[in-house]
Structures are given as C-alpha cells and as structure tokens.
Length: 201
Image (cartoon, rainbow, N blue to C red; front, side, top):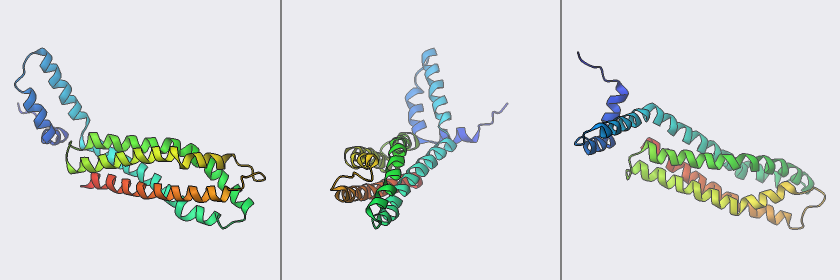
C-alpha cells in the first residue's frame, strides 16, 4: 500500500539542510539514533514554509511600522512643533516623549528578536539572505544600544520638564535630540531594507 507524502514534507525533504542532516545520520543505527532521527524529523516538520513565511511577514511589519513611526517623528512632527511658541512647544513635546518612551522600550527589542529569529530560522547559514538578515539584526541591536546611550536620556529629561521651569538650554537639547534621532532613522531605514531584501531574495 503506497503512502501519500504531504506537500510540506516534500518541501522540507528537498531543503539542502535536510539532505545534510540526513546524510550525517543515515549510517547510524540503534534506539538512541532512531530517537534522534525522529527529533530531527519533527524539527523540520515544525519549520514548514507557512510558518517561515509568517515569521518573515511579522518581522517586516514590526520593523516597518517602527521605522515609519520614527521617520514620521523626524520629518513631520518635530519640524512642526519646533515652529510653535515655547510654552506650546513644550506642552506638545511632553506627551509624545512620555508615550514613545514607554512604547519604544518594547518595540525595539521585539524588532531585534524577530530579525534574529528570521536570520537563524528562515535562512540557510552563510547564504546571501542569511548575510543580509544578519547584518539587519546587528544594525537593530546597535541602534537599540545607541538609543539608550544618547536619545533616550534627553527624551527622559523632556518628559520631566515643567512648562514654567525648563532649563535655559532646552532648545539646544531639542536640536541635539533631533540630530541624534535623524541619525537613528537613517540606520533604521538601512536595517529595514536589508531585512526585506533577505526575505524576498
């Protein structure tokens, strides 16, 4: 009686990584190696093309919305409020600083973890997509560290300001944050492009 092989299994077994694992195990026998074979088989069954595709989509959506939000702040919101009167400027900037301070503390790590997962789950090691995804992941990690060291401390100061008692150099601090943020946005765009390229390559 013939056995029908599911389509997902045929795709997995045609994967070069599957062939490498199979060739390394085919000469081994015994209960322990039979168990090991079943474990490897199950792991490849789990990472079917639909799951990998869903993972790539999730990574691109999360990274894309993060980059888009930071781009909008740099290009639209901050240039607009910088032309307002001082008191209005401060009152408009504080809610944004507080909200983004809370949201970005989760958004950046999630973006990094998704990019990292795509790198080591969706691509074969040393392949071109793997290298693109790895570079993107490293950039997201460096951007997160950069944010904690420079833009975030200024953002926290802005969130604590009182409209009637701001520091004399508050405009200089805002301009410095804008510059640091613009640098961050440039590298976010590069990281996003690399991530997308790794998934469509």
